[in-house]
Length: 114
Image (cartoon, rainbow, N blue to C red; front, top):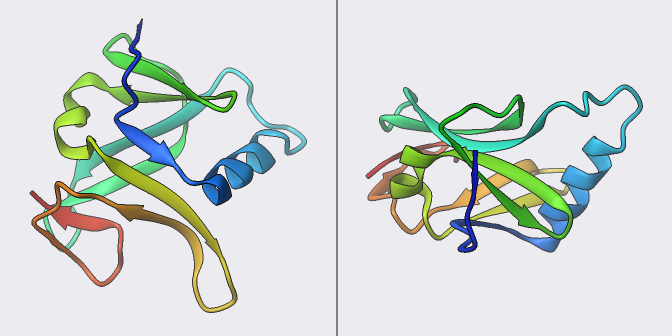
């Protein structure tokens, strides 16, 4: 695993607070780290991955305000410059993604094409 100085994906203050809340939940698996990535699928071709996972050999590690996140090295091409936010409102609740690399996105907000 490699730690890199440039942060490819940023988290808003709201996202940071929500991730910290999740990490501090009782029973949280401390062997996992926040994973940010992509996988094939979704209505536009690719889907964002955001969750807790065990680090793999081909991951890079980044730290923002005491939160360490991991990302597969090859995913940087699709995610560089992306911002993750947390919306806590009644009508819109959950993590949102603003990706400058997406040529089109889907109404669901979690699917994109490059």
